[in-house]
Length: 252
Image (cartoon, rainbow, N blue to C red; front, side, top):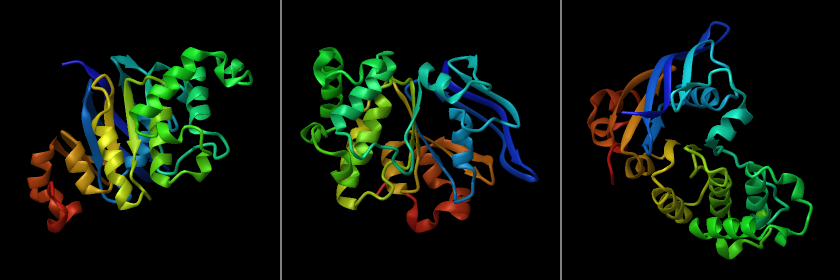
């Protein structure tokens, strides 16, 4: 089996604190995978190493079989690794259409044309409109981003990540702060994302995790505690004991 992402003995320490403890992890192409664990388990530190924000103390990170451990954030993004954040990174005064056009222009090395009229690259505008429609926010493409409901802002952040045409998308708590009434739309959009993109969901909402993920990895104290199918993790008494709690595990 070929892996889009692989870590080998990944470690990260901050002084005497071990934040990532010898994590070896393999993600197949097209995966629908969740990364879970209690607060302080090391999930964000692990993801920050995957994206290049942090440099591992030891170990390797392979992307499509190539060692990217020393690559910059930008080089990884260009190669096909995209990420969303717990707190969105949007430009409040732009419209969704302008935001996605800018992201596509960056991908196409056409960012220098950003200051020209929006319609000067019809192909980029058409692609941006299609992407916004796919994510269910085409109806607000001309609205000011800062005025959008928070759920739509989260969807826009996913649109910006997809504009890069990634091979791997790391979704960091996409439903965080989103009202319950809007979470279903986010889940539906994520479920419809193309199989050409491997997805890793970092999420505390266990109902969302079990509805989304085919496989799950559990981090505890920076180490890979266990991993398996969603059904195996839901039934694992060790996971219930250290993290989920009896009442929180399941597909309900």
